[in-house]
Image (cartoon, rainbow, N blue to C red; front, side, top):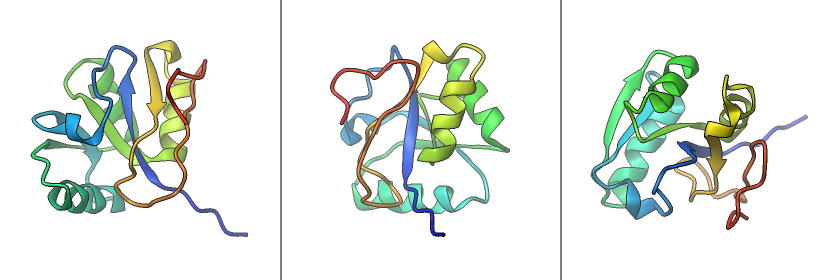
Length: 120
């Protein structure tokens, strides 16, 4: 069995981040030592986006940083982000939003307690 996943970003419901270009000047958390960390750096460089990456030790710390407003987004594999969004203490506060993936070109989708408008 093969499972294919892609990278994405988790943002808060109140976030104004709608496009990749909106990441300019923003803080994006990513777990250190992961493939997502390298892929995110490569993606931001290739797209000429100057976002500040913030290293966190694990997914729990990344979600907490996002919910506490310390970062504007958390980057990881989409499957992980969906799990974080639906199991967060307040799942309605966060969602996985469709993004051009830093690690792959797989189809975009959204998840959460309700399907956000404008997501594909």
